[in-house]
Length: 298
Length: 225
Image 1 (spheres, rainbow over the protein chains, first blue to last red):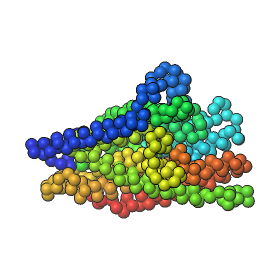
Image 2: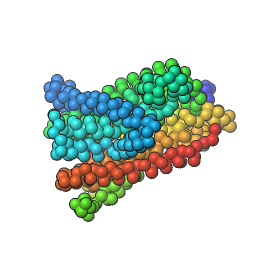
Image 3: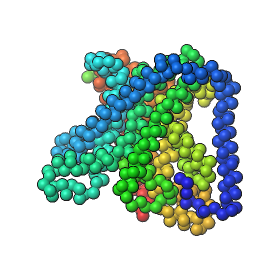
Image 4: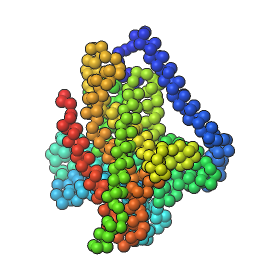
């Protein structure tokens, strides 16, 4: 974003003007931060005793880390499940059999349109009444909802990944005597998987964020623990901020990894980029192209 | 069957969906305004404005929506005494709208930025050549084309917003769809699956036309190049 071409290379006068606006902008930003800080302080939210809970080992040992562990557990199970689900239904949607294709299309479109929270609430009641599941029912409810929703998104990624491959790939496979299914399995899907890798990593962020919806069915994840802990201590605000920071750090790292992967892939593929009005976003446009199918996922 | 139909007289299901639509409507307006401002900040020549826009997007996009709405209700209202007027119910409704708007603004900003990326370099150069400075160039040349190029991602953000409006349940809006469904399946254990399917299909009915509409609009309004 350093060099936008919406404006000319500034001359001395424009540079001075930009400098002045820049200083005003920086002061404005500092002003907002200070306003929030002192506003909180005036309400007595900046007292050290409300914050030092979160630098004590016992808070982390008894509340935050067990909560984080459950969050990560739900996310990992959700990721594995949705990749499996996505591969099965993505390939199903590529099938030439109209029945399989139609069935997979309905399943994928249905689960993409239903709010994850609705599924979590439903599965929680459904599992506890109708199924005997080992361990925490709330965990399975969250995982099931994450798998159905994100699995459908992954299925779309698989499908669009295969569709975006050059046509010659399949022709070559058929020319050397592979069947259509074999060409799909051995040639097209592996390439589609590589191309969708950045979008897939981006989807992990969604899964991790959505696991916090488990809060509503009292699933013992990070947010739930933070809230239970802080409620009697009167530092709910502080607990929410600490929890948000933990989520942001993990998700930001994941997003950065996705960006690096997509940059490496795009330099390998050497796509011809049309110059656009904002430069410096080559990696982003590639990632965006491959998230096309999955971008309903916020 | 009669058992099932009785839920429609016992509970106000269309009313629950209407609450979600209202949440979506107000939050969408808020998110569009805030998101456009953020996008302008991010493409502006001023480094500090860019930094403000970028940090907002990075912070908000990586925070779970649940935390943002809980923050509005528990921290902003509960701890800091911030209210948005009206009675108790209206206040929670508006705080949830605020949370939804703040969260989705980050995605609107990214959608518009991806729209800006569809505008060819020559357009910006032409705008400069006729002597327009940053704001007029953005307002008259770049943004009108960018919005038309951003219809699909904006539509996807709207769809996400419709579904995410159920998270207002966390913000004590007990009249919206997911809260009503929760109450219903707790009391009517005989028809848990039909109740879920009713609500799920309700969302399918709302979401799919929006998707079709944005696809149609994106083709209809595409800038021919």
